[in-house]
Image (cartoon, rainbow, N blue to C red; front, side, top):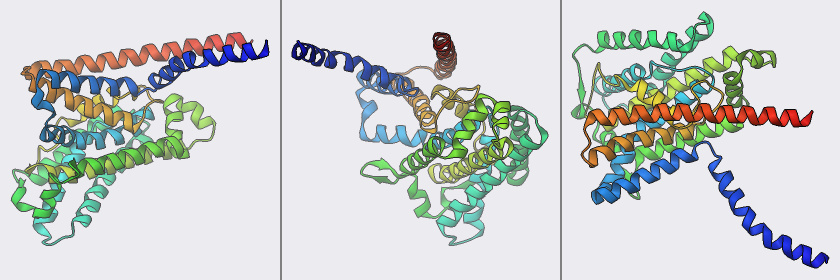
Length: 347
């Protein structure tokens, strides 16, 4: 009788483990975004076989690289219940500063330019962080102001000056198109950064503190989390990543000037939201935000490949953002209901 019971149990296990495995996989917050990305690529490829040529794949990743990097930084801010709307202006500052360095400091090592651009971004991020933490004003309000302040300062600094591909060293420009085993070097760099930020969010105490702050700022303070210090550090880190993105922009594109990066801030916030970073804070990852950035850029490329008008491209992105927010809200309500039921059952 025992043998029969054991045999029956063994027969049941395979059939129940598969649904559990699928349930676990699709319970990962970022999985629907990844599946949507794969589905979009396959559908577009079916409609236009030229979409997935070697050059097409390379362009998909290159076009999303800077947005992936910026979205990873923005995820630090949004997960702590904030948002940085000045990232486009910070990127413009860093990109223009890169051009100035190459023109005014001949033979400057490229690594020094990378460090300088990143530090400039960190400095501007520190200004945001200082204003947010000391003025006790919502980050959206502060960074909406610094968006215009930084952009105005860049307009004053740059004027009508632009730096073109001929103003930079050939080796620096070559980075923008270089590949390793067919994969863009800039994208590899961005992926490494995204992985590091994701590991920081998951394993570093200060990274996990950002989620606690985003979930309940007052409770986080009660539990001894240095809220101001953590939020300030998040803005500095975000600024540094955007500054790095500015250097990559100067390598990737043919010109930089006073308008570089204009309008990018909303695209980056959209990438985070679509990638599973809750706009209300407390939830989300850098790699999810990066996948969101890749998805939004792929949508634009896919719709272009099948001949859809640019107006509808923006409309599709807008609908996707609304759907992502609604899905996040529904899942949050379900989690809260499940916790309530569990708590009630425990009593």
